[in-house]
Length: 447
Image (cartoon, rainbow, N blue to C red; front, side, top):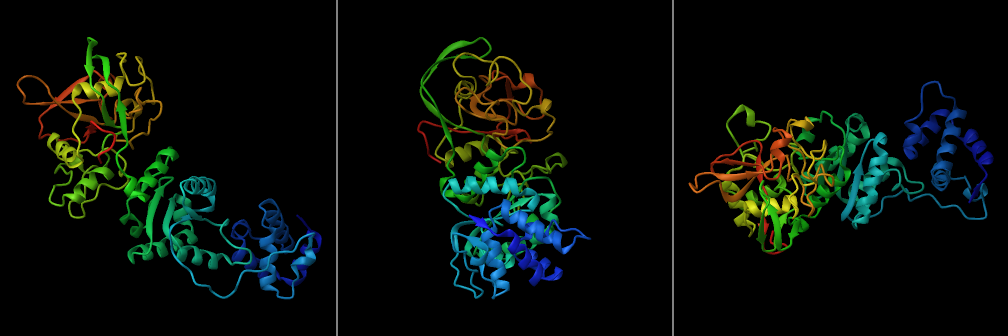
């Protein structure tokens, strides 16, 4: 489609003062307005506007905006071969809130990530409202934001220092929080880059989007669709495998094992269903970063998809029984971790940097499950079977039957302790900041 940009440029020059042009940009083309600097001439405003509209396919929007502001403007006079769109209605129209429409709020510096997220969510069947793509021709920016907030049932906020500093993100977020409190909208913050949050925003659990966008998307989808939040189970076929340091040949029947350790989010489902059961908590200074809020019964900020820790063997059994599952035996756990050929680590016989969360990774804490996937996955696709957290299993350490076996190593221990045959033990009532668990089943899905 061709536009007479020379004639259009002259119209803007003739019928908009510098201040009126800045207002036009503020109302309709915020991306251009945000790039204005002191000392720019009116002619420079016009050139930036036309360049932006030409490069981003926004010429129809520009014609509609000018027509709305100058009713004598005739858009067809500035086009060749096709009629121009008319300006959007100035009067409000009834709005129906769509429970599957997601309003994505972000700073313009994070636009690339926001658009990629929008594309991924659309692929999962969600409708998306995102600026500037969702602003209609002739619709002012503020009108469009109000419409988007009124018609969306879900609000997703990309958190970054730029977002916290943005007046528009602040406005959108505070409005969304009001809607959330009124039960009209669900609010989900995603931590894109570390930042200090306003006090009112800290009441919400955020999902980490740093360094692992695929994992972050998976976690967001699991929250958006709690009915589909059943544990992902991995089939371990029946057959023989090499077990232990001596690589003894043993046979196991088919079973299914959780792809990941049980996360705080999954453990909260158990606690919500059992309101009298205690939350993970230890009255020690070292436990503070991992302690749940006992009054609100929620997990620590930023750890929604970290493995649950501070759980005893008895806690793990209670969760497994509630979910209709069991803890794996030591033999089941080891086969799922190493496959049939007796590998030392889930990925092979040699230690590899950045394949799991041990002290060599220098994180100094647990990590979101699957952060090292797919490199650190077992032959069957199980994640975090080396490092991150020790995992309770159902086996006794020895014939005295006083301690239970722990497998897998943890974030605060070295690589040699993350070998799949390395065993540790503790008393069933013990809990620590580096101990979690996963579950098994004889069928594919019971959670």
